[in-house]
Image: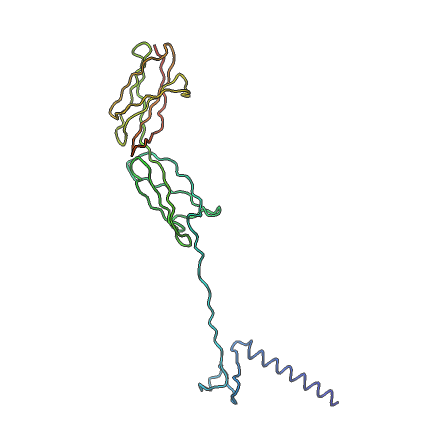
Length: 240
Protein backbone atom coordinates (compact mmCIF):
# COMPACT_ATOMS: atom_id res chain seq x y z
CA UNK A 1 0.00 0.00 0.00
CA UNK A 2 2.84 2.34 0.82
CA UNK A 3 4.35 1.72 -2.58
CA UNK A 4 1.03 2.37 -4.29
CA UNK A 5 0.53 5.65 -2.40
CA UNK A 6 4.06 6.69 -3.30
CA UNK A 7 3.49 6.02 -6.98
CA UNK A 8 0.20 7.98 -6.95
CA UNK A 9 1.89 10.92 -5.23
CA UNK A 10 4.72 10.83 -7.74
CA UNK A 11 2.27 10.87 -10.70
CA UNK A 12 0.43 13.88 -9.25
CA UNK A 13 3.73 15.70 -8.77
CA UNK A 14 4.77 15.10 -12.38
CA UNK A 15 1.38 16.20 -13.73
CA UNK A 16 1.45 19.31 -11.57
CA UNK A 17 4.94 20.14 -12.82
CA UNK A 18 3.88 19.72 -16.45
CA UNK A 19 0.83 21.91 -15.96
CA UNK A 20 2.94 24.61 -14.38
CA UNK A 21 5.39 24.48 -17.32
CA UNK A 22 2.58 24.76 -19.88
CA UNK A 23 1.13 27.78 -18.11
CA UNK A 24 4.50 29.37 -17.54
CA UNK A 25 5.84 28.99 -21.09
CA UNK A 26 3.03 28.13 -23.47
CA UNK A 27 0.03 30.17 -22.32
CA UNK A 28 -1.39 33.36 -23.77
CA UNK A 29 0.33 35.35 -21.03
CA UNK A 30 3.54 33.56 -20.12
CA UNK A 31 4.54 33.71 -16.43
CA UNK A 32 8.18 33.14 -15.56
CA UNK A 33 9.42 33.04 -12.01
CA UNK A 34 12.47 35.11 -11.18
CA UNK A 35 14.71 33.26 -8.80
CA UNK A 36 15.36 34.78 -5.40
CA UNK A 37 11.90 36.16 -4.69
CA UNK A 38 9.39 34.93 -2.22
CA UNK A 39 6.21 36.50 -3.49
CA UNK A 40 3.95 35.52 -6.34
CA UNK A 41 2.60 37.74 -9.08
CA UNK A 42 1.22 37.56 -12.61
CA UNK A 43 1.28 39.95 -15.52
CA UNK A 44 -2.35 39.16 -15.97
CA UNK A 45 -3.18 40.34 -12.43
CA UNK A 46 -4.42 43.85 -11.79
CA UNK A 47 -3.92 43.62 -8.02
CA UNK A 48 -0.22 44.41 -8.02
CA UNK A 49 1.83 47.15 -9.64
CA UNK A 50 5.00 46.54 -7.66
CA UNK A 51 8.00 47.11 -9.95
CA UNK A 52 10.01 44.67 -7.79
CA UNK A 53 7.63 41.79 -8.52
CA UNK A 54 9.14 38.32 -8.63
CA UNK A 55 7.23 37.57 -11.85
CA UNK A 56 7.66 39.13 -15.31
CA UNK A 57 6.20 38.75 -18.76
CA UNK A 58 9.12 38.57 -21.22
CA UNK A 59 9.07 40.67 -24.35
CA UNK A 60 10.74 39.72 -27.64
CA UNK A 61 11.59 42.02 -30.55
CA UNK A 62 11.02 40.35 -33.92
CA UNK A 63 12.93 41.73 -36.91
CA UNK A 64 11.72 40.91 -40.44
CA UNK A 65 14.05 41.68 -43.34
CA UNK A 66 12.41 43.81 -46.06
CA UNK A 67 15.45 44.06 -48.31
CA UNK A 68 14.61 43.39 -51.99
CA UNK A 69 17.32 42.05 -54.27
CA UNK A 70 18.07 44.61 -57.01
CA UNK A 71 18.44 43.49 -60.63
CA UNK A 72 20.46 45.42 -63.20
CA UNK A 73 18.35 46.40 -66.23
CA UNK A 74 21.34 45.50 -68.40
CA UNK A 75 20.66 41.82 -67.62
CA UNK A 76 17.34 42.06 -69.46
CA UNK A 77 16.75 41.39 -73.15
CA UNK A 78 15.47 44.16 -75.43
CA UNK A 79 13.61 43.98 -78.72
CA UNK A 80 15.11 45.66 -81.78
CA UNK A 81 13.30 48.90 -82.60
CA UNK A 82 12.38 48.98 -86.29
CA UNK A 83 13.23 52.04 -88.38
CA UNK A 84 10.57 54.76 -88.36
CA UNK A 85 9.52 57.34 -90.95
CA UNK A 86 9.79 61.06 -90.33
CA UNK A 87 6.45 62.61 -89.34
CA UNK A 88 7.44 66.06 -88.06
CA UNK A 89 6.56 64.97 -84.51
CA UNK A 90 8.51 63.25 -81.74
CA UNK A 91 8.51 59.49 -82.27
CA UNK A 92 8.34 57.37 -79.11
CA UNK A 93 8.41 53.62 -79.73
CA UNK A 94 8.22 51.33 -76.69
CA UNK A 95 10.69 48.44 -76.79
CA UNK A 96 9.83 45.03 -75.36
CA UNK A 97 11.89 44.39 -72.22
CA UNK A 98 12.14 40.90 -70.70
CA UNK A 99 13.94 39.40 -67.73
CA UNK A 100 14.45 35.64 -67.96
CA UNK A 101 11.54 35.39 -70.39
CA UNK A 102 9.11 37.48 -68.32
CA UNK A 103 7.92 40.69 -69.94
CA UNK A 104 8.42 43.83 -67.89
CA UNK A 105 5.87 46.64 -67.67
CA UNK A 106 6.61 50.24 -68.64
CA UNK A 107 6.34 52.70 -65.71
CA UNK A 108 6.20 49.79 -63.23
CA UNK A 109 9.53 48.12 -63.92
CA UNK A 110 11.21 50.73 -66.11
CA UNK A 111 10.85 54.23 -67.55
CA UNK A 112 11.81 55.58 -70.97
CA UNK A 113 13.52 58.81 -72.01
CA UNK A 114 14.00 59.84 -75.67
CA UNK A 115 16.48 62.09 -77.43
CA UNK A 116 16.99 63.17 -81.08
CA UNK A 117 13.68 61.45 -81.89
CA UNK A 118 12.02 64.07 -84.11
CA UNK A 119 14.24 64.64 -87.15
CA UNK A 120 15.78 62.22 -89.64
CA UNK A 121 18.79 60.46 -88.12
CA UNK A 122 19.51 58.10 -85.23
CA UNK A 123 17.34 58.50 -82.12
CA UNK A 124 18.13 57.22 -78.63
CA UNK A 125 15.91 55.59 -76.00
CA UNK A 126 17.26 55.39 -72.45
CA UNK A 127 15.68 52.60 -70.41
CA UNK A 128 15.95 53.22 -66.64
CA UNK A 129 15.13 50.48 -64.14
CA UNK A 130 12.40 51.03 -61.55
CA UNK A 131 11.39 49.16 -58.39
CA UNK A 132 13.68 46.18 -57.99
CA UNK A 133 15.33 46.97 -61.35
CA UNK A 134 18.23 49.39 -61.37
CA UNK A 135 20.64 50.99 -63.83
CA UNK A 136 20.15 52.19 -67.41
CA UNK A 137 20.37 50.80 -70.94
CA UNK A 138 20.53 52.87 -74.15
CA UNK A 139 18.83 51.70 -77.34
CA UNK A 140 18.82 53.37 -80.76
CA UNK A 141 16.55 53.43 -83.80
CA UNK A 142 16.58 55.14 -87.20
CA UNK A 143 14.22 57.83 -88.40
CA UNK A 144 14.22 57.81 -92.20
CA UNK A 145 12.95 60.56 -94.54
CA UNK A 146 9.50 60.53 -96.01
CA UNK A 147 9.34 58.99 -99.48
CA UNK A 148 8.03 60.27 -102.80
CA UNK A 149 6.40 58.82 -105.95
CA UNK A 150 7.10 58.59 -109.68
CA UNK A 151 4.40 60.57 -111.45
CA UNK A 152 5.33 59.90 -115.10
CA UNK A 153 7.74 57.89 -117.28
CA UNK A 154 8.20 58.54 -121.01
CA UNK A 155 10.63 57.62 -123.78
CA UNK A 156 11.21 60.91 -125.63
CA UNK A 157 14.01 59.58 -127.85
CA UNK A 158 15.56 56.30 -128.88
CA UNK A 159 17.31 54.44 -126.04
CA UNK A 160 16.12 57.01 -123.52
CA UNK A 161 13.54 57.30 -120.78
CA UNK A 162 12.44 60.38 -118.89
CA UNK A 163 11.32 60.17 -115.26
CA UNK A 164 9.22 62.76 -113.42
CA UNK A 165 8.50 62.57 -109.69
CA UNK A 166 6.86 64.48 -106.86
CA UNK A 167 9.16 66.94 -105.08
CA UNK A 168 9.96 66.16 -101.43
CA UNK A 169 12.16 68.77 -99.75
CA UNK A 170 11.31 68.35 -96.05
CA UNK A 171 14.12 66.52 -94.24
CA UNK A 172 15.45 65.37 -97.61
CA UNK A 173 18.82 65.89 -99.30
CA UNK A 174 18.14 64.24 -102.66
CA UNK A 175 16.84 61.18 -104.52
CA UNK A 176 17.86 57.77 -105.81
CA UNK A 177 16.39 56.50 -109.08
CA UNK A 178 16.63 52.83 -109.94
CA UNK A 179 15.76 51.21 -113.24
CA UNK A 180 15.85 47.68 -114.62
CA UNK A 181 14.36 45.37 -117.26
CA UNK A 182 13.30 43.15 -114.34
CA UNK A 183 10.09 43.93 -112.43
CA UNK A 184 11.87 42.72 -109.31
CA UNK A 185 14.76 45.14 -110.05
CA UNK A 186 17.32 42.37 -110.36
CA UNK A 187 20.70 43.85 -111.33
CA UNK A 188 19.15 47.33 -111.25
CA UNK A 189 21.16 50.46 -112.02
CA UNK A 190 20.89 53.48 -109.72
CA UNK A 191 21.15 57.21 -110.40
CA UNK A 192 21.67 59.72 -107.58
CA UNK A 193 19.99 63.14 -107.82
CA UNK A 194 21.77 65.40 -105.30
CA UNK A 195 19.25 68.26 -105.21
CA UNK A 196 15.93 67.82 -103.43
CA UNK A 197 14.43 70.47 -105.72
CA UNK A 198 15.01 68.49 -108.91
CA UNK A 199 11.98 66.53 -110.13
CA UNK A 200 12.98 65.33 -113.63
CA UNK A 201 15.82 63.15 -114.92
CA UNK A 202 16.54 61.64 -118.36
CA UNK A 203 18.36 58.31 -118.49
CA UNK A 204 20.26 57.45 -121.68
CA UNK A 205 22.07 54.56 -123.36
CA UNK A 206 19.34 52.04 -122.71
CA UNK A 207 18.33 49.06 -124.83
CA UNK A 208 15.80 49.74 -127.57
CA UNK A 209 12.46 47.94 -127.60
CA UNK A 210 12.94 46.82 -124.01
CA UNK A 211 10.47 47.33 -121.17
CA UNK A 212 12.03 49.17 -118.23
CA UNK A 213 10.80 49.50 -114.65
CA UNK A 214 11.54 52.66 -112.64
CA UNK A 215 11.30 53.41 -108.92
CA UNK A 216 12.49 56.23 -106.65
CA UNK A 217 13.37 56.92 -103.01
CA UNK A 218 14.55 59.94 -101.03
CA UNK A 219 17.63 60.22 -98.86
CA UNK A 220 19.04 62.59 -96.28
CA UNK A 221 22.66 62.91 -95.20
CA UNK A 222 23.17 63.41 -91.44
CA UNK A 223 26.72 63.67 -90.07
CA UNK A 224 28.08 61.98 -93.17
CA UNK A 225 25.62 59.09 -93.00
CA UNK A 226 22.73 58.57 -95.45
CA UNK A 227 19.22 57.67 -94.36
CA UNK A 228 16.84 56.36 -97.03
CA UNK A 229 13.08 56.19 -97.45
CA UNK A 230 11.40 53.08 -98.81
CA UNK A 231 11.30 52.64 -102.59
CA UNK A 232 8.20 53.93 -104.36
CA UNK A 233 5.82 51.81 -106.38
CA UNK A 234 7.35 51.07 -109.79
CA UNK A 235 6.25 52.46 -113.14
CA UNK A 236 7.19 50.93 -116.49
CA UNK A 237 7.64 51.90 -120.13
CA UNK A 238 8.92 50.35 -123.36
CA UNK A 239 11.95 52.28 -124.52
CA UNK A 240 12.13 53.37 -128.16
